[in-house]
Length: 69
Image (cartoon, rainbow, N blue to C red; front, side, top):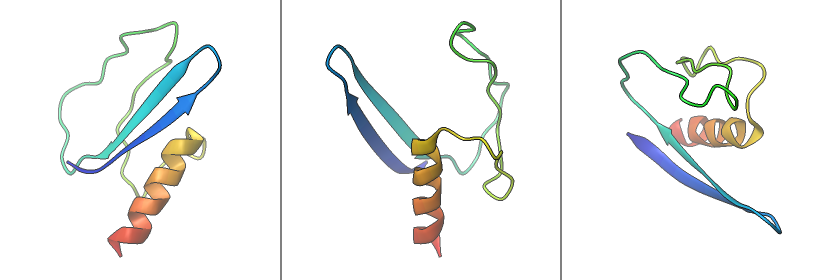
């Protein structure tokens, strides 16, 4: 695993932390454990990402790809 990042998001009544990693290998089936919050989980190659991404994730991936060169 590589590229660990954390992004704190502090709101007046909430505090969120987003953890981001790049996995070199993956296996197994992804399972939605909070169906009221998530529709689905999917694995994607970095060269074949969906157009709609969570903006902090898009920034993290773009930074990773830039540094990887």
